[in-house]
Image 1 (cartoon, rainbow, N blue to C red):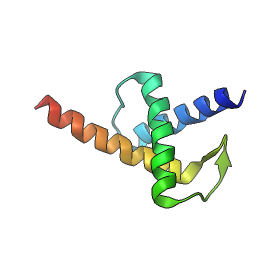
Image 2 (spheres, rainbow, N blue to C red; image 1 turned 180 degrees about the horizontal axis):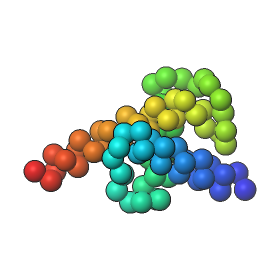
Image 3 (cartoon, one colour; image 1 turned 60 degrees about the vertical axis):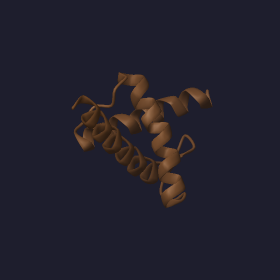
Image 4 (cartoon, rainbow, N blue to C red; image 1 turned 45 degrees about the vertical axis):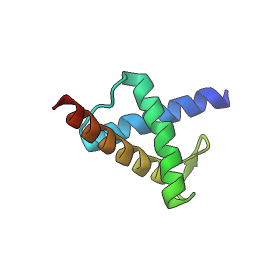
Amino acid sequence: MGFIWSLIIGGILGWLASLIVGKDIPGGIIGNIIAGFIGAWLGSSLLGDWGPEIGDFFIIPALIGAIVLIFIVSLIMRAVRK
């Protein structure tokens, strides 16, 4: 059950980050889950483990990491389209 909970929290974090940035991540729900997981890793690596924790995710660093990830992916996707 812990793995399913992590997938749900990762998806929600990716979805919230895409709403904040205003760009959609490619891949729909799967892309949001991946962005949430990678964003959580990136945010925890850069900012440390602090703030509220839900489903083994520290929410604030994970959200900031997912926002940075989606912003970088959107810049790369825009450059590839040109």
